[in-house]
Amino acid sequence: MAYSLCLLVFTQLSAVKAADRNETTRSGHREGWVSQPDGRGTFDILWSCIFTIFLCTWVSLHLNVPATHERYRHQFSRKLRWMVQAIMAPEFVLAFATGQKVEAKRSVEDFKDLVLPPGCKRWTVRHGFYANMGGFLLQPSDWVAFPVNSKQLHWLIKRGYVDYPAMSADELWDKSKADGFQKSLTCLQTGWFLVQIVGRAIQRLPITTLEITTLSFVLCALLMFTQWANKPLDVESPTVLTPNKRLAQILIEAGDAANRPYKQTPLDFIDDQSPSWLTEVQPHLRFRTGPKLRPLSRLTNDRFPVIGAGPDAVFLFLFTMAYCGLHFVAWDFSFPTPVERVLWRAASITMGACAFIFWICETYQDGHRLGRWERWYAKLVDGNKDGRINTMEKARRNRRFIPVWEVMVMTPVTLIYTIARTYIVIEVFLCQRSLPVGAFATVQWSEFVPHF
Image 1 (tube, rainbow, N blue to C red):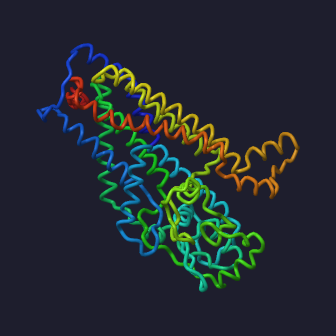
Image 2 (image 1 turned 45 degrees about the horizontal axis):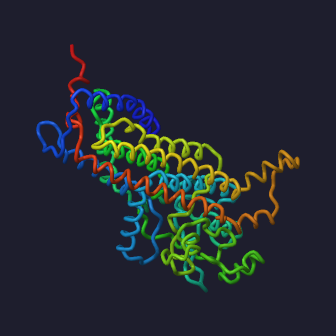
Image 3 (image 1 turned 90 degrees about the vertical axis):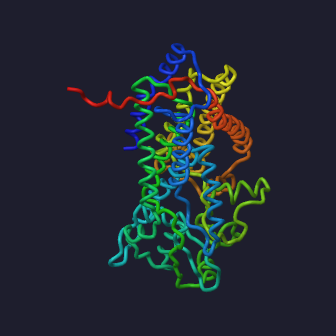
């Protein structure tokens, strides 16, 4: 349904640029602050957009399980930071959601080789989400508790160290704190906002840049809800798993792979939670933020998505470019000054170009992380039909998960994108000081009612 709504909105917006241009040409008048008359005023536009943006960026966030006994203010501040991130770059938050969905789907394939105990349900995408968000806490008798993700849990179950979790998808969903009122309010508000936008486009009424920007948040929120549909919301307490052997014994039996010092948890030799901004990039840049305790007491929310080359990657690329392209709808809008129109156009081009460069670099590096290019080379050149990569090549890739060239390219690209995006966010509010007269006209809903 989310994809159908996106298509409908983009179809109706094809007439928005002409409507705004015609209105400006016809009247030539602009208005500053307009109080609420019988139509809509400046406050109506601001309130509707700000309230919609808040709902889209706050309610749609599905963050990981917090650390045990973590204070509420720490959880609140973390969600507030992610809300700011969703305002500045909602397409990147959507990328994290898509990556988490892909990892959850991969875990389903991994768990198919396990023999289930009697009465246990099959591993589902919902189980994968729950595990990768830190829903399972390993409590060894000789070590502090730490979270395990789906890959680590699969390894422990396959070797008989812990029992298969006897939780069905419905029982797991009971731990979700999904607020029906919040989601209902979000659906009602975003639905009404979309109806207003489509109605104004059909009747050729001007749409403000703030409403265009809010529309992008609405579309991102709908798609985030779709990607996170099976991820439990606001889970506060994890499920504790007790291994039948001491952690020291488990590491000894794991062999040489477990001899290296760990960076995140003692099970790093299975999966080290990389790549992550908090646990890898920030320490490399010598930032003093992020979890400091080791082993990690919670799984961070910012593990970079390794999506691969499947349909999810194609979907995310198309939507990211469509999100950037949505700002081009306001290319010929009437701005308070010609300079602001030029800056808007420059910012729109910059955002699209940066997003495209980001995708080129990330697609190449993502294929390197997954060994896609080596497999293709082995199949096409070496005639290796299995397309397998040797252990030394895997180790080489792991050592350069975030190579120097990627940091050197992505740092200026990210900075330039941030500047362009910041201007867009500020400009949509500055434009409210002077709007075309038609922007305050209301949709004549009676025209949509059949007359006999």
